[in-house]
Length: 457
Figure 1: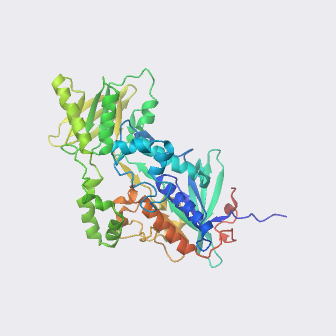
Figure 2: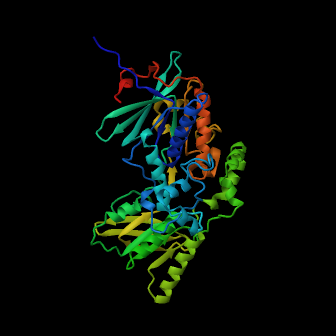
Figure 3: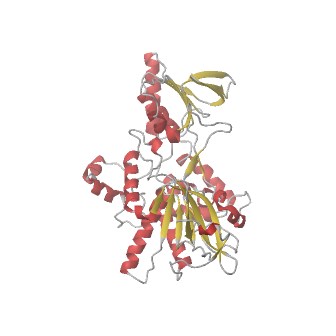
């Protein structure tokens, strides 16, 4: 006699990705459950997170020496939501025995490597909620007796090739950003994206002595790559290629920084499409294709010092673009076009580094047939409610929430740390309201594809 496969237990939420945003969400879940234990009238939510990496890691390839955060440590994973939380950056410093040292440092901007250590410290403390080495490959609908999609099965593949299912009444996408390359470009052993810079450099043969690098891009990451390569390889030439006349300074002034405040999200969300476009245009220089003024000064000083010495190791190709790339076994030839004159210059390099930004993942790529129920705006982008829930047809009764990929609806802080803590609180409040009175035990809905729904856990 054939037994009926048992469905996996249901969680109030399943988180996809375990970068800073979903680490913050896991902290919020833990704190909510702690409150629930003390106040039974406040129900706690159950949740699990799936992360394809084997351990926590956040832009490891750009943890450069001396690189500092561009955002205040007060905008950590919890403080703006719950200043009393023991998951704040100051609690981390206290645990690490560096609190007084940091205070004496008189800065709001810790080293990037130190902030990464803080994030890993937080991730480790809520590690019981995450399954590492689990790459999400599909999301399948689970229908109730009325035929509506009331839950979702998140299918993840582990390192041994096995597939596991996690069922949720809500899912929260936080897949992070993916490196963006110019059209036609591809990554090779000699063509890199800055996302993997340190890993690529570490993989070089110990006897390797690169003589020439080309770095493409006009933003903070590009400038940091130029600076790092220039200092790390004192005999190498570094060619910086960007379409602007010079690096543009970031606007870090107090009034402009209000664009990252939680209140700015409300203002942006309620604005017309025309006003949204104007706001983004006005304030792009707070975050996009801009460089910290101190770093600009450092690079200018290095370039000028080279001229004084008569050895131009740092070459700025401004108002320029990469017109062609030809790779050979011994290196890569980068053809640089001067946009003003049209002149082409061939640069023989050991390595080409694209520091050309990132793209947000589109949740529809994983949603399968559920994507048919996602509401889109006039530009074909997913419509998103103010509480970060993906807008869907009435046939979908479960919640699909986004942490990232909402810049067109919620503004410039969508993919940044600035609003992570507050956003997490809003998402948890929304899920709590939607799941009030719903039991946390597995129920018996009708899954799409009975056999496939029985996958192992």
